[in-house]
Length: 357
Image (cartoon, rainbow, N blue to C red; front, top):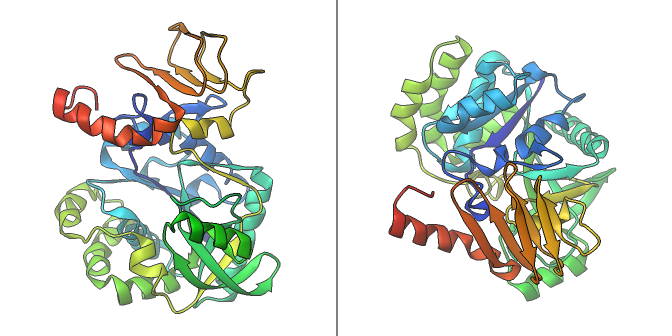
């Protein structure tokens, strides 16, 4: 059987002040009244049933996730006691699934992107699942054809085309400088790394045993306990602090013997900052992106305006700015400075402690 595992553990400091330690960005209703995690589950409908969808998130978000996703069985939501990056989250998911169905196909999806149209996405997922099952020794990833020379994303270097939208992978390149990124875009052989994957459990478990054996050994008993319906929180709390913090790209993908890539032939938006919201929302006639029940913009253009509840947010005579209002904090900055929010949040922590984090 095929299973989907959605990784939903990040906090998203670049969406402060709405995103907080106890309210991560994937649970913010920013796109069409839905949160990013809801959208991630919605677009899998028809490819995976609710019982086949698993969520790996932070333990402190687990109850919120269950409330947001009532269709997903509560036991399919696993809370990590602390972040140990994607390699360990995936290893945990693999062991949980292997204890139930060792011959399964496992698909890994992100919870913080907008991908559309959903039908085209599901077509790519089907292609990737078939590729993983037809090439059971391979790890399959999804690549996005780059629209511009992004320096904040990793790139996949493709080689021979094996079928419709299916390519062999020659290597991975992490966050290049702009001249190199421009060469990648112009080459037509490099794709943005989406951070999503498909593989058979045999393939990923073998790769993890080779490249991350300590984690596999420690997580196997947790998978067995979860399959038996036991509370795994105590085991996770004991085990997770001992795991090496490392991404799946560094731990496995860059070292794997055989990797294939399916081109994701649809829109793919990383909603990781306030300016990125403009790419997934319909702007007004002046180019303002407004996500608010009550907002007025006078003589201003190309702004991002966000407010919670019925609080009135009025913006006048401003262009290319971000204005975000939450119950206890307001952010005003130039769009060009929005990438510095982590710096601002760090300063807030030093000055005010945990109050506004």
